[in-house]
Every structure is written in structure tokens, then in C-alpha cells.
Length: 356
Image 1 (spheres, rainbow, N blue to C red):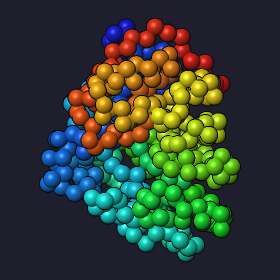
Image 2: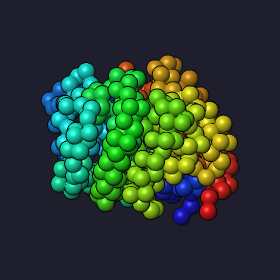
Image 3: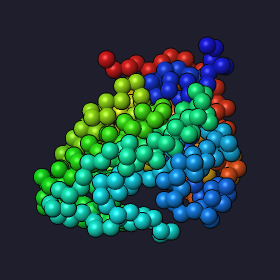
């Protein structure tokens, strides 16, 4: 197949493997969401959880960025807290953000968290992936996702996003064995959940460690890294790429590499060129334009996309933002970002050296 004939899926998967491509693949975290008028129109009629748990609606919302922006991957519309709900915690998603009932604070509560069968309790996620695959066929990759053990534990202990994960840290320091048990339960449940998404047709899966930056290097290595290794070991994704996103984690790059994901997604605080040096060329990179840049002039958006690619040389790089797209982003700016990244022809045709 000539490079000009490569599908979006081929380009994406080759980039995940660190192979040379004619251009970088581009998608946007939270690309299905409030900045799109067609998404807002659906949300006027249906609640967030109604959309997420209705495969036809979830598939429609997931496909909107592909139609509007021409992105190179479709990520299923869902939420990382679906796993917490399936493990037995009540979940509500009001306008102010998700809330988990009965926050985990005791050993008894950790004990009552149950394993779940993704083919039963969260079947709607796999069904949505199947519907998306039926529309895009073999040409476009469909991504599944879940939260990382530490990040999900923060929500499960705090009950909602607070920003400092203080209650989670209190358990971690005061009852380390209990906290490790919670992380392990989350890791094993999440592995089964992601397996079901791959079985439904997912071309790759992303693990979101949104609160990774709240951990020191020592605490990450002692608590989160073993949980991530358990998750990835249980997942045993084989040829299916696993992307690990970590926010605020410039101090954790070497440890994140040890987790074993195929692709490390970093935020805008990390210099991609420096990350490549730290990670060597064994791990592909994703990111990392500041989402706020998409609120400015389009020329700045295009320049940021080009500069991100220049820092990696484009090989083993998936262009994305450093966090989710902001709800006030103009649609034309999101399109400019995608098109600018797709327009950069890569001269470097030498694939990355892969670890053996």
C-alpha cells in the first residue's frame, strides 16, 4: 500500500508502534462535547448518563467530531466513573460535575466493592463501540478508554473532583495496605472493562490518569505504578495499543515509561523534545498543545500544531491537546488544529527503535 493510500486507522496504529508515516494522526481529547452545537442539541433532550448509556446516542455523539472536524480517531462517548458505578457506587452527573454517592472511607466499603461483568453491567459501552465500528468500517480507528487506578480512587474516595485529592492521600498515608487493596480492585476491574471494549472492536484504548500530578515520584512509584502494572498485565492487550495519559506529570516520565503502555500522552507543561529524550524512542508520544491556545487566533492554533510536530519529528507521535478541549472553543479553531496537523508532511522516514 502506498503512503498516499493509507487509511486513518493505518496511520494511527503505525504511529502507536513508532513506525514512520506520511503525516501524524490527529484527534482531540473530549472531542465529543459541549463546544459542538450538535452535541448541545442532543443534551437539551437527554441527560449525560442517558446519552452515555444509550448506544445509539453515544455512537452519534462519538461520530460528530469525525464529521465536523475530520479527526483521525473516534473515541467512544462515556465517562471514567462508569467503572465506579459498576463496582457498586451510585453515580449522578449534574451540571456541576459528576458525583459518587457513599464515598469510600472504610475497609468495609472497600470490601463491598464488587467485581462486575462488563458484558452485563456495562454492555452499553461495548454496544456503542460496535455501532461506531459499523459506521466507520475498517478505515477509522475507534478508541475505548477508562480511568487509571489512582485517578478513579480519588473520585471514589472524594465523591467528586476537588483538585487536591486530600481525602485519597489521607487514606494512602494512614492506611497504605487498604489503599493498595482499593487500587488493586480498581485495576483488575478496569482491565476486564477495557478487554470488553477491545472485544467490541476498539482499535486502541486510553487510560486517563488525570490526577497523576498530585503524586510525588516516591508515592507514584510506591502506589500507582504497581496498580498500573497490574492493570496492563491483566489487560494483556497484545497488538492493541494502550495509551496512558498523565496530567501534570513531568516529574514522573521515567516511572510512567516503566508502566508499559505503548503511547504516553502528556500535557502542555511537558516539552515533547525533552520527553522524547527521557523516554528514548521506545514509547510513542501523544499531545500536547495547551487547550487554551485554541481560544486564540487561528494562526496561533496552526503554529502550535506545527511546532508540536517539529519537537518530535513526527515519528511515533499522535498530535493531540495536553488535556480536554475547552467548552468555549470555536469549532473553526478545532478544525484549524486538526487540519494544520494533518497538513504537515513528514520528511523523517526512519522508524523509532523499538525495545526488544
